[in-house]
Image (cartoon, rainbow, N blue to C red; front, top):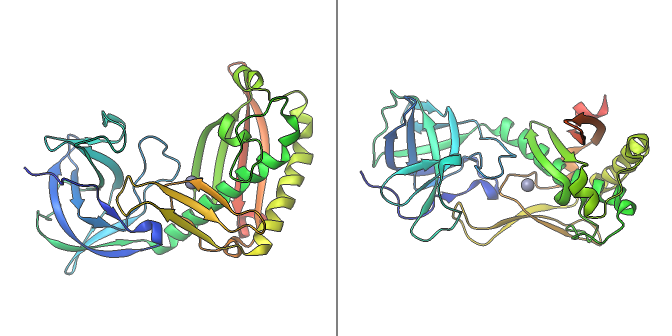
Length: 294
Ligand SMILES: [Zn+2]
């Protein structure tokens, strides 16, 4: 059994939805499904370390036969075995390891090593997920601006030079079709870093209004969005870059995005807090387009 010696080449950062590829490796998984590794792919896999954006919906096409993907995840191999997701024992870029996009298919899939196939992604799902991801980044920057006066100490700065509440307090980020849900822990460790949490519940309506006004302003600029990248391999560093007027922003990001903010049409957040085992948790739900205007 031979494993790829280098990272899978990924084309989704450029917006690619379909690519010709060669099957490099096929392997049965313990759960009865099968892993297919390609030299190159357009399919966005879910990341093990920061699983904010899920897998694309996609098929592997071989002649008239379409094999649907059941999942698409990041894996890694040292040449001896394939490790998946959270079971990868080394960090990205570890010497002697190849990080690969694992296309998970049914156990009766007929593809074999050496097959020439086309990896094709569901365009509508990709577009809606990309909108949700761009919205997520914008909302986090707008949230940072809205709560900037709540810092007593100077924390790290975000991509616009604002105190980075999002980067400091984020617990989980989940990107879905035309939406994202971000949760922030307003606990002791955040207060120790100098963030004032007192009275935030009462401030939520004003903060929501402020964030939505910032987002409307940004969307109206129709600023261009693109992905900067150090290379075309799965683990090469990539950045979301947005040409916001007067203050271009750049954020490390492995996901997919729209190409201009005008595609989002309308963008709105809803803020709420709840108590989780004695710690207050702030939730920001961001919605795009028709879903946001109701
Ligand atoms: Zn991102």
